[in-house]
Length: 168
Image 1: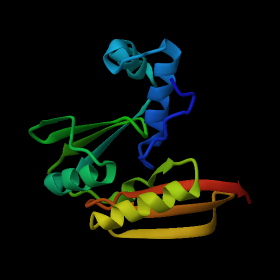
Image 2: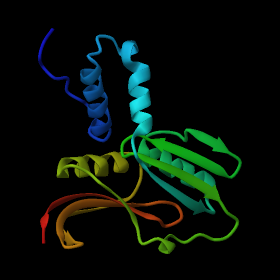
Image 3: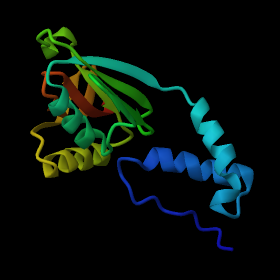
Image 4: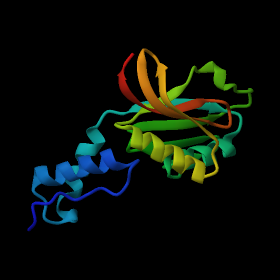
């Protein structure tokens, strides 16, 4: 058996799979099925953020978030959808409302990533999916030098994917 660590091909989902491989090593797994239950239990214990967004554009929002996170809702009911995202660890629900929703009710939402290459890869992935992005490099924000990209959902909720390069 080689001592070479597996490389993770996915830029966006890398940290989650890195954690799964760490758990394989922890349990000394020789086969994927051998540790599936133990790893599933450990992943279920991980903390994650829950965000519940109201939307008056339900179907558009489901399509947007499916593209943003690269997966369909884990559960969907009438006027409600839930995304269980592993990386970043977030439980996002969309709640259909009949009242108009304006994104300005929230300043913005963001996901901090480990490096500028991940920001660039996310920007490219979102553009490839037909979403309009606003990339920023070497920008000073929140007393830090950052690279980031912005994308806005159908209700005007702004999302940023960012990497902090240094204090400013």
